[in-house]
Image (cartoon, rainbow, N blue to C red):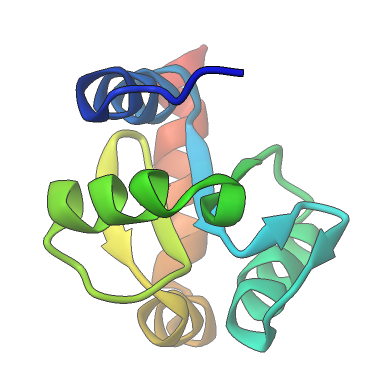
Length: 113
């Protein structure tokens, strides 16, 4: 199995962000996040009942490093809505509690129709 180049990984990340209205780059899988912060973000989207995708940043060290360089954000999870980088767990949770996250999601999902 050959390793993907940094350029290939970056293209994959950009394509995922472009192709999914809501995507979270997390530690672990959608059904089994392996850290509390990732679990919190996944639970928020499940509670809202909205369609979302996840990508496991632990698939390779290079994948995680490339994502962090692309976003200039040092931690995971990393959440994107409608192509816009939202932030990590704390910001996503704050937006959720204030109702702003729901507005962003609504707007993103409306743009789909």
